Amino acid sequence: MSEPLATAGTIEMRDRTPVAIRADNLIRQRLRIGDPRNPLEVAEGLKRLFPKDAGALLSEADGLAPLPSRLKPSPLRAPESAATGSELTQAIADVERDLAALTADHRLKGITAELQGWGQAIRSIVADGAAAARLALDPRARDRLFAARRQLGDYARLARMIGALTQTMTVSYRRLAQSLDQVASLILVLAGEVLAGAGVGGGRFLLSVPASELQARRDAVLLALRNLAGTTDQAYGNDQWPWGLHGFREMLRAIEVSGHLDLRALLEEPTLGKLMDELIERAAQHNVVGLRALGATAEVAVERVHRLIHIIHDRVQPEVPAVTTFLKSLQLLLDAFTASRSGYRLLFVARPPIGLAGASAFGGPDTATRRLIDLVIERGRLAELLDCHGCDCCDEDVICQILLDKLLYDTDRAIDLYTLGSDENGDEEPEWRAVAFGLLIHQFLAGGASRTEPGTQDARACLDGSCSQCAPQVGESLARVRNLLFAEKLDLATPLPLPADVDPLRPLLTHELCMQRISDQRLESLIATLAPGCVRGSRVLAELSGLIQSTILAIDANHAGCADPEVAPPPSKESSLRIFYRPPTRQPNDVFGMTVPRLRFD
Image 1 (cartoon, rainbow, N blue to C red):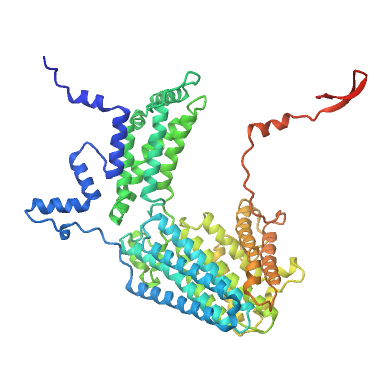
Image 2 (image 1 turned 30 degrees about the vertical axis):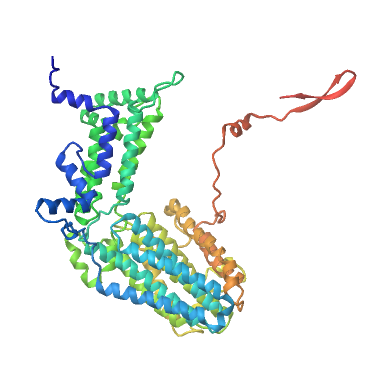
């Protein structure tokens, strides 16, 4: 007798084994589809995975010989401005010429090898930064972009410093620094134009992690759910308590008691996996259509997951490691969508001020973004003034030039922080870290270094016009940069010492300045190698350190000092027991007529 045919419900129940679920997830991950049981979705996924074979089949279906021209063209990368691309090519060529001039100069024949090393490193950084700028839609590419910009700024500052310390070579080094600054600025503009060319417009949603990392986080969520529900292939041992099953049962009970019964479906792997796959599918399309669709649906889609965390949190007693792992994996996935606004200001950096009205449909630039635009404009003025300020008169003038170049470098770092900020009013950590550089400029203008570091250069003497007629204008430009960075966060009249309401921010400001001071201290051997010694490198670093230290003490008079962090592992079980250890005491004891010490533990 033949067996009766199984119903659809029976097949569904039979296929819900851990192996079948794992196979479905593998198909979803590999083919980038939502439903592995839909043949149309599977077919489309296979076509994307094997485009050459798909083109051949399409030609065969049309009755034609399989030709490569029948392949579906891949989506084009968002175009950037032709003007910016030409300017970037010209700036890179200028860097090459400046490096070649320095390397071939007979006056620098003693450090030719070091300058060739500079050339290799700079070329690699420029290539990586330009490539990352053209892929600005990808979050990791934006990270590489700002890393390249930071490194180019470091080399530009170092070139200005070595040039100030090398007689007759100041102009050549500063030309290289100017070219590096131009490349660093243009790759920032290029990234913004790529975003604008992709149609992002003035939107506020940019992914904070790439689609590949989203996939890894999704797999971590499902793995944590399997461990929690006990659907893994590994069984509990005879000496193990089923904490995972206990936690899973308590989670179900908490959801049922709360009345949010729709959340129980999220504890099933197919439902939770489908929800995450739909989001990842939009993020993995590598075009602005998927990104904008994701930005419009992500918050609604993950709202159920947020509610699940709220309902379960602190409801499972005693605490179960498997439950905590599951909740943490969910939070890690949600972070990709809640912290995704950083970088949207690139759009406004790339646009000229006259074209900002075009973003009015999206709300236009916010207060912090307008402040960033003004800061970028003022930075250009300051760089022009400093280039005409150069003077090789005496040691004090060289020190002044190095201090002013450091403040230009700090302005670039403040621009980076504002570009990566996301708060409309500029009240988040990146903008407050930028305030630290404003305080540094204020301390310089006030001549504060000479009050706390005996024997250092009086910063106010750098702007009295004795070395250059541009000095007063430099002071005015620095004051405008300082005012923009303060941005009503601090009183312009008496910002130092800081008022009491800024107490929670003191560690943040001093930490940013400490990183600068420690970074400068590492340059001592490099300066000694590349500079001829007309002005001692130790004195240069002492001047820089004095300015930063005086600013730190003005922010926090009780600051303990700057030091590199020492990363220490947590104590082991054995070392933790030392708190119960008491050293033994020795007392005499007669053994066979001999006096020997006896150990006694108190």
